[in-house]
Length: 475
Image (cartoon, rainbow, N blue to C red; front, side, top):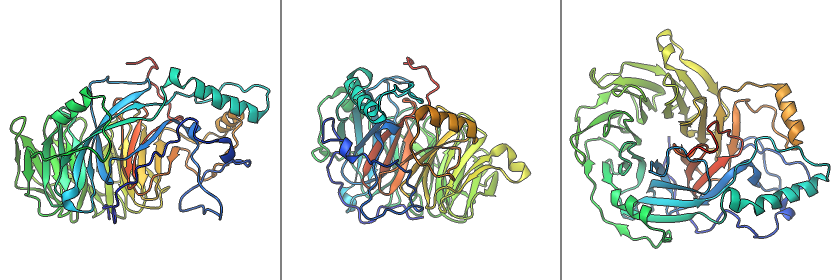
């Protein structure tokens, strides 16, 4: 699987989110019913262009930090465990893919004033007025009460940079101590960083720092491990045992890191060996502190127990192509999701491994490699998938096709969108508009929020049809 961004160029500094009052939106609204466009299936005719439907989102913002980022992570904060009220604030770490190795850095940044509004899944019964007039008045109403329901204006980005030799293949923040981050470099080194001072400075500062103006800090890592025989992408912090880490490389080796103190680690020089090709991703069990899963270019998923030697407990064929990414469901620990280079993704019930076939769901919607997959931290049946087809899709596996319910919904909403008939009923949402999507994450403390990174920067999105079952007034 090719994961690097080819010929990276510094992102153009432009605001992709239209500001209130910029131009007239009515001139761009087509007179004919809109159509859902499917990459790889539909073609754009001459003169046609794709348009985003802003009503499909509770919140949608775009930003960048300079060079493209192949990987990032959302940093847990102290602003509240469950946050439902706009505007939001979020903290991130990301690793760049710069043109020259010495130009790379880890970006530590804060995005505040993330505005938006909560919309009803089914709108109130429309009046008898003309449909177009009703639509225009509804838009103006939304504009007028933005301040009451979610704030307004552009999100504020504050950025600090830490020098990093070589491109960052993947970066992860520790759950228990979020200021501790581990990065995989294309130099073949895994490094652990203490970013506490940068996160504290961002938390205390309200000053806007321009994306290009931020100075680069020449900070030394806590640990720089060169024991891997090749570069890699697989890395995961243990959610139960603080400081425990696993890293996997393109030479099929997996190393276990055990914390010796808050700032030192003992890395086992003897790797876990079982895959016959590159280890692409690693995931610790959400309930067993010694058990983790790995996936590989060899098409297999393996389950390991750190207490019982260096061989896998079990290994099974998961896909007919490279297995690029996996995600262990933290709300239903028997379920493991996997995404492949052939565009397919599967759901495995680990309780069925002894019987042979563990696949309980398999989807062939995407036509290009799956680049990221992750279960929702708030809904056990919901997961999202990103692909090289420039789509980020959200799925609810508990859904089945109900024609009567669909007809009732269309009647209530006076639905005018021509949706393709062959879309799976489990498909909740399709997000497009980013080029060369690489990775995304759900925000664990802001239900319904997803952040994604691509060659042209980051998106923060909150789809309006992702129902939040948590109370609206939860803090």
